[in-house]
Length: 324
Image (tube, rainbow, N blue to C red; front, top):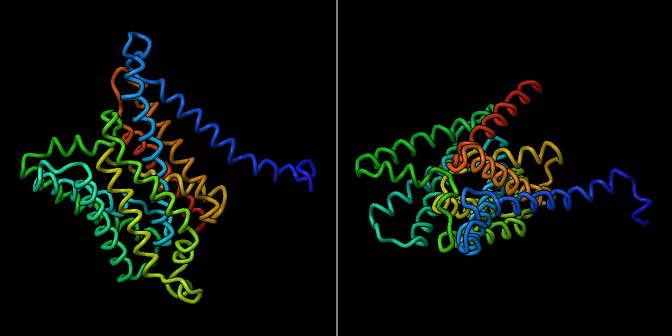
């Protein structure tokens, strides 16, 4: 069958992803040339381009892709559309791990901080999943409520620890969720999350089966416990690395997987490219808006993501209510 004999709907479906990738690539290129510093103003423009603009844009791509995919994994493992690292306490645990590392070993290099933050995020994710397995869930809304309460407790303890050690201002600067401080030599550790995304692609089918429940996964020969640990570990690494380098990116893992699922259904492997592209596009757009809206000052990406994410979260709740 030739391409001309295919139905128009099928041809449009095949072209949709390349068009989306091309559109996102255009946004990425645009991000390289947006900023308060005029690259053509002096002879240092080319050097500034590679010191600041390129690392920042690469960080946007890696962080957006990693956090969107992390949200998809958590939603599959918990069988709930309302969870992602910022609504389950994973990000807050990573922040606690980072703060403890800095207080105990102030001279610790970035890789050490990243490892401790990822380990803390993994512990927090397992605590959240352990709580879910021990209570009766009569409504899907109970799951994010538990995560939000757990996040509040961990965040309160982190804030108390920061206040006690006179580190509150430093804590706020770390987790602002802004790419302003991303320069060459500081963002390279984010390439680890690219490995995480590749592993998610390779492990997607098992994660999908594990998301159907322990009984179904066991009946088809999938080790549910192992997949749960691997999936939680991948989320912890992505969240820990992103938190250390960038800070909080709230609701990104909630918005993108849900929008993709509403449009394309629940095929996790088929949706993964769309989740990656969507995560990158949303982060880049929010970052461009943040740089332009009050130029030469910048609005943190986390603030814009919070507004967008909360609107999508409320919309999902209203859709659920409308469906009874």
